[in-house]
Length: 173
Image (cartoon, rainbow, N blue to C red; front, top):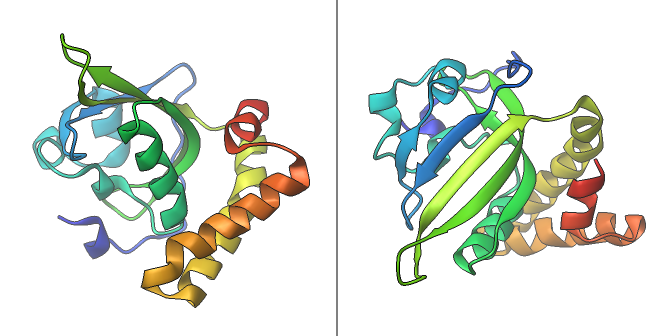
């Protein structure tokens, strides 16, 4: 099942206090391992997740520019942290604070990524959600070719107004 086949709905799910969602992917973003928390929360079976591209969990409310920024950061060899709205198999969603850690092999070469996610605070969600809505609107208005640039411009304007980088904003929410 592809995430584009899932119809999002307004039902929000919540990660239990003290729980973490953990998954690993290869260099192409295909899931190589998941923990029980991800299976239980997402509604996907382990078999449906393993070997599938991680974007199976991508909610359409998350701007393409956010994923482009995350991907550029981790493929550049740096860890990434951010707030993400994930999609469940039944169309419901959950917000997470995601920390994606770069994994290297014995020679120090990029080997994959480990994502550790916990519940996002309500303060963080209330701050970032309207920004993501504006970014998605700009991306849609710009069209596919210029979507990431348009979404990035909205985010940059928001961050300039706050006087922060994305990493600083994430750290303070």
